[in-house]
Amino acid sequence: MSMHDLSAAPWRKSSYSGDNGGDCIEAALGFIPGAVPVRDSKDPEGPALVFPAAAFAAFVGAVKAGEFTDGEKYLVP
Image (cartoon, rainbow, N blue to C red; front, side, top):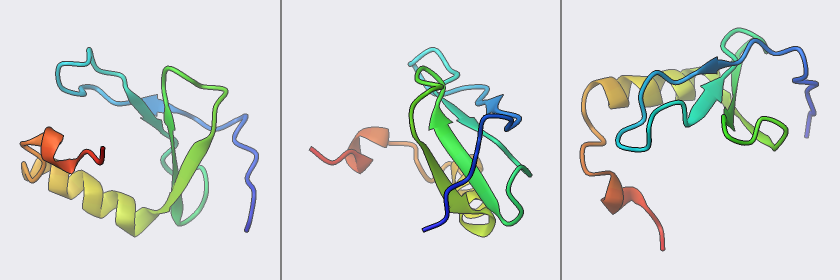
């Protein structure tokens, strides 16, 4: 497992996250070649998940295409 120092990462907050008031996640696009770190914007000192750039792009594409219109069905109890 490779660890990355994300202290200088250029975090960008999401512009909208449903009825939660927005700014729920942040991503550091382009900071790690071929990967995208993602973290909870309300816990900037907490952990970050690092996704392959292609997987993150597919996720963003699915969101833009409206594939997550019923968010509750994707939650795991």
